[in-house]
Image (cartoon, rainbow over all chains, first blue to last red; front, side):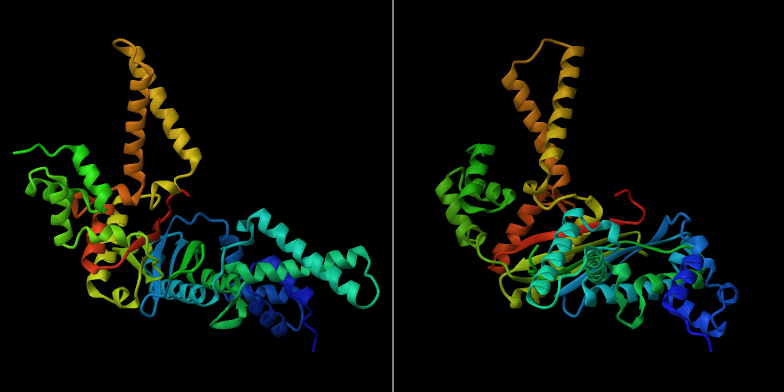
Length: 206
Length: 206
């Protein structure tokens, strides 16, 4: 049986815009054959998702979730292409899952593009200072390209912590929220976008 | 019968922190006598409000309101001093009224202090350009102090349009939201503060 490398999965994801787990499964099924895996995804209707990601999403809903007696609350706007999908039960279930996830995981942004440049710079600075301190304590110094790579890796972890779309979905940690949205796009047959959200907790610092 | 001037009402409001309509009523009852009006307000428990306005508000609730099938939604944080009030039905009714108001009246900020300086400057600029155009069209030029006064008046109207606390309460347009909050503070006997809100409408420009 062929090994399904991370590289292979990434390539298939880029070609099809499908979720990571779906790509892995298709590649396993196709015994590592990329073209065959793509066909499998197309047959399942999952590979359609990619081509839909650019379509206008002007419909949708505003929905909210209040946790317990009201210590935490979430409001979201999720867009789709038609009023028909906006009213669909499965779509509404999906929106509810996204809100539950936000309530539990406290993301700060929807996408990494929204993180202010100053915050990214600060995180990069912290990561590189931390690394310097680690290098000063033990062992030999690392070459600059290795340092850059480690800092970049830590920044990726930062994004995965604060950005909703990159977080692991609490109900299925094998999926990111991006994967979850993609699977819903495939199911619904139209583009879906989490446009914005806020999460409030009583008395939290602003 | 003594005339109840706006000046008199403002003085009483500053002394007692009570709502405008309450002050007017008390002054009418007291035939324009300021001290007596204050005593009337104290007896009604309304004048207590002032002394409470500085107390810490660390409890409260996060609540949300979705209009109809989800084209518009509101989330708020309203703070109070104790968990007891946060759970009180009358407090929760009050929060619901505030949300209905926000859904209907689309304020942009809670308080005027939150309006960005650039937005205020722009409004001031528009008001004064408009006034110049009006003066150029008809009649004699106005002295600078009159111009300043008119521009200030228009800015006040701008604040009353975009700031929740200064809007006329939709359920009772004689009251501002500030008045409404003050009356609730008097009723509950503890400080209450609308801390923050967002109002989402599907597809609106950001």
